[in-house]
Amino acid sequence: MQRYFVNDSFDENKQISIPGESAHHISKVMRMEKGDQIIVVQNNIAYVCTILSVGQEVIAKQTGETVPSPEMPIQVDIACGLPKGDKLEFIAQKGTELGMHALIPFVAERSIVKWDEKKGEKKTKRLEKIAQEAAEQCHRTFVPIISSPLTFKQLIEIFPKYDAVFIADEENAKGMRTRFADKLKKVYDNELKSILLIFGPEGGISRKEAQIFQENGAETISLGPRILRAETAPL
Image 1 (cartoon, rainbow, N blue to C red):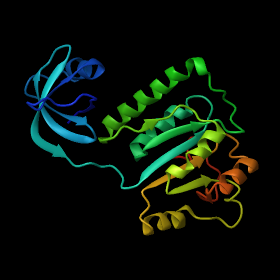
Image 2 (tube, helix red, strand yellow; image 1 turned 180 degrees about the vertical axis):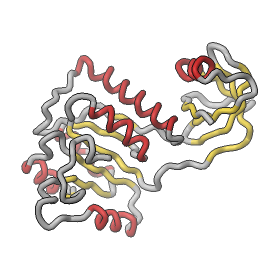
Image 3 (cartoon, rainbow, N blue to C red; image 1 turned 30 degrees about the vertical axis):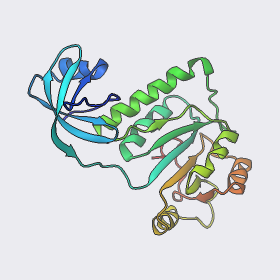
């Protein structure tokens, strides 16, 4: 069953109007008609709905049935040093499929890419669209939050929001590795609710950055003995 996210609320008759691209997709791409059923996600709840009419806007009504949420019990936010090319789009799409709660790009010391402020809002909107489409495709009830890029200082300032902060550190992988699985066991044992995972751009996190991160409470982890690409490690 096709899934669509909406911002508006259902009315007193448990009906809702679906506008824009979602309406176009229902009518022109899926060629749905009156009587067909879709899933409408509103406020993180997935309602099974019956289509009442199809036009420039689609009117649908709740059937009384909802679909269980597939969301993870722990909020996992991903902070990525700005990578080259379309890698951030790839991370947004696949990270959404794998259950991330938010994607937070940040300007790292070794980031080659410089964020263009004039085009930044447009890029963020595109990432949000990619995340929404991926959330619909993989039947999530939450569209990940896409943050505008943060500075290094701004990233550190959000550490207190999380129960745990981890850095994927390639230097950690070269010696006596701190296994991520062991760190995750502590997360579950202590019933933590939110974690932030930090990944560097191409070239990784600098020693200076790693030191400052740790001074502010972050812990290093290793994802194994191999060095992963900037777009692979977060996934």
